[in-house]
Every structure is written in structure tokens, then in C-alpha cells.
Length: 358
Image 1 (tube, rainbow, N blue to C red):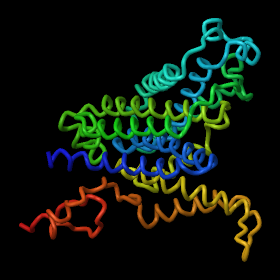
Image 2 (image 1 turned 60 degrees about the vertical axis):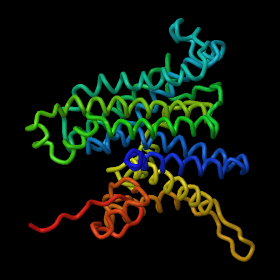
Image 3 (image 1 turned 45 degrees about the horizontal axis):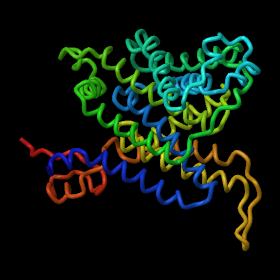
């Protein structure tokens, strides 16, 4: 029992952290609850990105395109037929008459994103290094340009309005729990372990018989599903879907969260999302101007983006593996059990055990 609890501790601790944040903020104002709801949506997007990036070691710029696909599919399935007839007169009859419940529509959005990831991933997952990253950015561009010009289905550059707004703090918490649990379960599977082995040494992994292409594709498809769910929740949080929402700003934000927390661990993905969401909200308030009575500052446009970029730069320079150094949260009594065998003084993150010199 103790060994099982120790193995599941990283998952349990992350779920406790996210739940505690939600419970503490649920008694706040409506503005606070909306801010936490948006942060939870971003957390789901970061966890979705981690499933592929963290396990494969390949940087992906394309996950925001999966968010766009999920958002558009769910929007088209949940909007009232009368609204679709007015906004999208050229929409095929089968879609224009559809009016699905929100949960099946959300799952359909995630599955549509996964299907798109599967089709594009078959050739893309054979690439490595910077070539793979550029290819995923090309996928983002294709979706952005395609959705921005497919006026009969997406409305082009216009917004799809009239979506049912159901993404509240509790629904987003539930999806966050599902995303974190799924990400942890995947990285503990045989496929996840083999993919991380290829991340450390792809030549040795292939020599040992690991089908790197297949395991990358599996991670890519699972990653796309949760990115699609994040897009669904964002669309039904804002009440509108517009392609400009799913482009470079959101891409940079999600990547910054993952890099700051640490791409090598699920703990890094979650902690990075929490830290950057809190920092972004603080900077947004400072940017709008602060009045404390004894001191006040005027609006400082662009401060938030500048500080966020500086924080990302400092992390890359001085802590390139992120805040967690690519490690999961440690079992609280692990340091007591292994004591002097630890090579790092951090009490929170699991560290490698030192080996005696031969």
C-alpha cells in the first residue's frame, strides 16, 4: 500500500493543489472565479501540450490549432439552428440542423482534434529536432489560414456567436482532473516509458527495437484530444469563437507555461500553468494602473508581455529545465528514507540517487 501511494503521490499532490486553489477561490467574487476558470482552461491546454512535448522531447507549436478545431466543432454542434442559418447560410444541412448537448459536443471536438492530429502526425512524427517543430508550426498556419477563409463553415474572420456559456469553475476543474490523471497514466504506460527512452537517446532506443514513430504518434493524438477539449472550454467560456483567438498569443502563453514549469515532468506543466497564470493576472492589474492610496501608478501598456518574456528568458538562461528541473513532486518522506543518498537539497522534487564510486 505504501509503495502504491508513493508511486501515485505526484498525481495526488497535483490534484490536491489544483482542487485547493479552486476551493479557495470559489468563495471569491465573480471576477476571481472567472480568472480561475480561465487559468484552469490554460492548465488543460498546457497538460495536453506536455503529453507530447514532455514525453517525446520535441517542441510543438501546433497544439493551439487543435484547440481551434475543438472549439469550432463544438460551436457548430451546440449553436441553435436559427443562429447558424443566419450566420452561416452556406453550412451543409446535416451540420446546420444539429443541436447537440454540451458534453457529447465537447467530446466530439476533442475527437475531431485527435483525428486531425492522427492524419497530420503520420508524416510529421517521422521528423526530429527543429524540422519537427517547424512542421508543427506549419500545421498551425494551415489551420489558421484555412479557418480564416472557410467562410461557409467557420465564418472566416468573423466570430461565431451564440454559443451556450457553460464553462464554469467546477466543470473546468473536472476536466483538469481528467487531463492531469490521463497525462500521468499515459507517462506510466509502456508506450510513455518507451517514448521517454527515445527522448533521452533516440539512437539507442531505435537500436533496442523501439518504434519511435508509433509512440510519438500515440502521444500526439492523446495530446490533441486534451488540447481540443481546452479549445472547447475556451469557446464556451467566452461565448464566441474567432480564429484570431487561436494563434500566436495563445501559442506563446502555453509554451511559456510549460517551459517555465519544466517540460520534463507533469509537475512542471501544472506548476508552470499556475505560476504564469498568477503572474499574468498580477501584471494585468499593474498594467491597468494601481492606486494604493499612498501611491498610484498610471497605465503601463505592454508591461505584462514584456515581463513574461523576461521571465521566460531568465528561466532559459539560469534554469533551463524549469522550476521543477524536470522532476515530479517527491513523496514527502522520501528524503527521510534515502537521507544522505540525495544529491540535491530540494525537499519538494524527486532527485536521482547517487551511486558509489567503483
